[in-house]
Image (cartoon, rainbow, N blue to C red; front, side, top):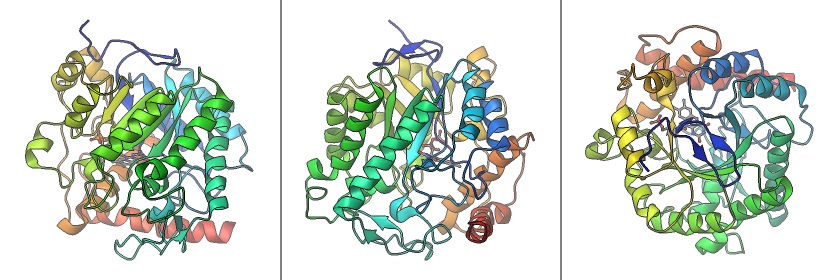
Length: 405
Ligand SMILES: Cc1cc2nc3c(=O)[nH]c(=O)nc-3n(C[C@H](O)[C@H](O)[C@H](O)COP(=O)(O)O)c2cc1C
């Protein structure tokens, strides 16, 4: 039967998505030093909840306050209070859509403003503008603690009303550091073969499923590859996906890249891949012949006809969009009611091509902040402002958090 963006989709757990449009995780950086959701998160997600997507994923919620991705992250750990979450989540699910928590641990990608000595699978440091400390390899009991933190955060998410969870195993964060042979040099049961490198992720999934039952949606975001020499590759990814399928996840989200190579945003991709939209669709197509796992693909989709064609050809089940939610105030409603054919990419001024991804991240962070304050998206943002946005934010919040602990 032919599918398009308006077709409903039933997940293995029985949960139904009313259409094929999902908002992928976009880190919000809006939390104060208590790392709780606040009125800015509420306003932002009310805006998105009322614009037509059937599934909203949160920006990454961290499972350990010591190793943040941003000083403005939301955190769920053992001492976290539920009230602020219940307000935020209750508001969003009242729109009768799915709202899933993306759970993450930054590992070595925790910047110096958040953590001077992060942890990782091994002591392989991220060399980027001297922003990241040399990581301490986790001990076996440290790994057990990380698994327990993810499982606890998943249970907490269910208790406060999220209708599903997603484990962030992509983009070079801690689980992805375990998966990649570039960053995992361990010689114990957590390193070496792909069976061992995938163990932490599979343990988290199995224990969460056991605790939360078969009717609660569990998703994983995974790289199709890191696109780095000696990194996690498509064979590794295929192995992990087949193992996740055996363990009964609901939705696999495919992305790619790390802080070293932002393939998730199309950086460094061949021009032909970028212009075809859908950076990871070739991988998804190959996967379809090997696996029946429900598939969400995120990265590069901008044109309604391209989305409908991919769905009609059964190349994927759900389409994830990130930046379009920060490029057009009416997205995705325009796709749904047929008044928008294509989301226009803004021209982002970059000061220096070496740091293009920092300027791009800053640009979108400013746009997200505007929506959270009830303002329309800006039509122009200067290159200098975009480039400085995130370093200044992290510095300011880092200092404030340190003195308000
Ligand atoms: C400002 C910004 C924040 C992001 N934060 C996250 C995040 O918290 N978790 C995540 O998995 N991906 C994150 N991403 C990546 C997006 O989810 C998505 O994979 C990427 O933007 C590609 O999709 P797009 O071409 O539709 O934007 C972020 C991207 C942007 C632009």
